[in-house]
Image 1 (cartoon, rainbow, N blue to C red):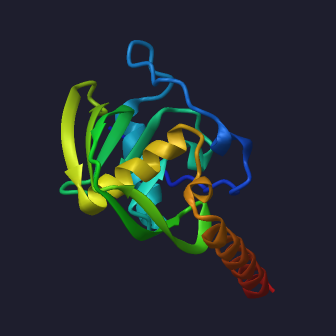
Image 2: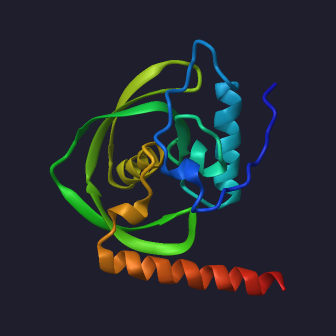
Length: 173
């Protein structure tokens, strides 16, 4: 039986968010991959996200989860190909609550990843699914979405984060 657990999100300035994560070892797993996937999905939903990487909860595993039909986990993901078409859409991130800014990303992506059961698959994602995959993949590379922003948008995002942090502190009083 898989036990369920909701993890706490770590602070946006935690060092693990800036580190490229090592491959998840299916030959000698540090944690049950199916349990990890379920816990990450539960955590993502608890925080009302549509994607979540292990390092956002302080775990050094190369895995993320994302909404889809059905929701799924991607262990050791690789980008095989991206479209030349670039789309700018507003993105948010659970590591940066209250921040939403436009980010340019490829419209389509072809990827390869391993499911929690150890099976490797190749998929093509478009639209929002491609965007979520690329956003979470960046987390595993140690890249947060602030680095993808236009400088004007980054300045706005940092103001949003500061404002949201003040709001949260006032709510706790």
